[in-house]
Image (cartoon, rainbow, N blue to C red):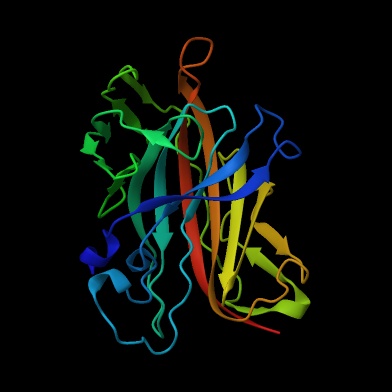
Length: 277
């Protein structure tokens, strides 16, 4: 089972979102930087990268990546995630929490990255991809306790100097999703959490089912999130809901030759769903 959890992450750029209307702090806008987790992390489906040719039955649940924000003025973004997942099945199982470290230092735009040498978070070394993004998949949650901190070290390379930062805000608190996994599109849907979101600047909601996906960013509004029938229009079949709460700190750059470097702490909870009309 652990081997499934630790397959490779890749980065992709997706969904332009402007948060001007929901943030009363520094504006975070621009493209969403998606840390694409393999299907193993969500405990469903099969990976084509393994050379398997058989078609799973039933059709596997879509597995969107964990969404993390990319500020428009960022010179780089490093994100520490706690990802909470439940194994679907007839017997209820407690959620499993894993740690993920991911990020990159931007080149000419937020869609290109540069090599910054060795990168670590809490002494765990991240692997550099061919596109100069960095990833580390933990096999457990290392960020526990009353105020867990993500300690980042970037060695630097070429024109990029070395820098480091340890976050101080801790991680968002997010209850598990307790609402029904049956989603009737025409009625809309309310996502209910077992505990209100706390210590978060904003929340990213992702819904995917069939061939459709939907993303929106909302302020921290507690433990109940309404999705309208319009937002869910066209959704059908097996899918997934993700609630990703995050906070951010600027730990390097800004006011000098290097653009601000953002350090994000995020917690993601998810639920497998079935959408019907």
